[in-house]
Length: 143
Image (cartoon, rainbow, N blue to C red; front, side, top):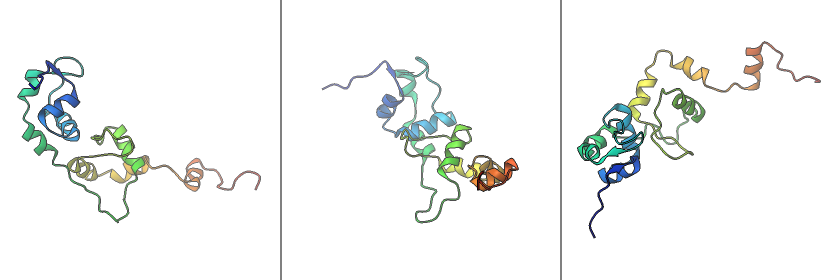
């Protein structure tokens, strides 16, 4: 059976055609290795996909696992999600229950001189911290 060659490819179809992971393709888009779609706002032409270098996309991603299993994380998943929302980190996973980040980008964010302030700004406050910040007593009313 002959393989069907599409005229336009969405991101999923392009990753299958190139035999690269979706995360690698997303990272390559983020760093500009994969140009913006040229056939529509979400599709690439066949010529654009055929011009992409799958090996370069795989090499650019080179994803690893920066976390050490068994050790306590220094930054909570809440903060990571906030950093993604603020465009400080790029989400490479399509899984809503987890994140996949490029270790190089994480390392870059970790080198920010104001990282402690960024983390503090995006960390939820506990009851005592919230009361202190608001300048109110931490004792509930009616106690």
